[in-house]
Amino acid sequence: MNVQPSFDQINRRAWNSRDALREFTRDKTWTDPGEEAAFAWCESECHDQPLLDIGIGAGRTIPLMKQISSDYTGIDYTASLLDEARARFPDTTLHQMDARDMSALPSSHYALTAFSWNGIDCVSYEDRVLILKEMFRVTRPGGLVLFSSHNRDGPGFRENIWTLMPRFTFNPLRYGWRTLRTMRVLPLSSYNYVRHSRFHRNHEGYSIKTASAHYFGILIVYTTLIEQRRQLASLGFMPGVAFSCSDGHCIGDAVQTDDAWWLHFVARKPPAA
Image (cartoon, rainbow, N blue to C red):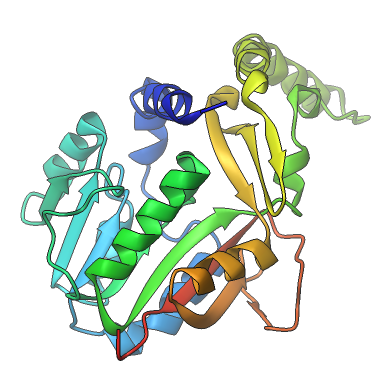
């Protein structure tokens, strides 16, 4: 079954929702210690060099990446979020563009090509390959590619509507607040979960499943540490590094699994590519 149209229909609906706009316009810095560690690993090498930021949403990463270099370009395929980013950062080079086809951007140009906040998970597995190929193409020889991805071995993969039930506590006020919060989110979350669960698939190395974000309103790819390393190598990338979102620790090459919610990968395009 080809789920590609459903990925776009489901996820674009979520990105254009008021919930997404409210979430993406909050003042934020790094999403987690792993993202901060991954960008810090790249910073000295990419200082004052051309940077490409994919899936910028409303612009959370713009000031963060501009601390590395003012030679910055950002893209996103959601017009409403991109309009918000342009209003917030009017003097920044921003384009509406789909990461699966970045043919309008030059080849072998950027020292760092980044796709943060697990954005690469929000397309089909086949389109994930297209995005990584495009990231490889636009990155200069010897340059870096950085992205984050949901971990199938982490707790997020096991989330379902039952995880929304209020956790018991002997504090009546706290338990009452948790119950009210569940009553607020459960109807829409249950509807979305049931509607999207028909697309759930398990494959060797990765799975397709609805995620709890946006009231179980998005469909994403969960991959494994081993599979992501294999995929990057198959596309011509040199061995890189990975960081856990939980505490930012660097995951060694010999490690084959990790229990983080998601992982941050940094890979290198070969200098002779």
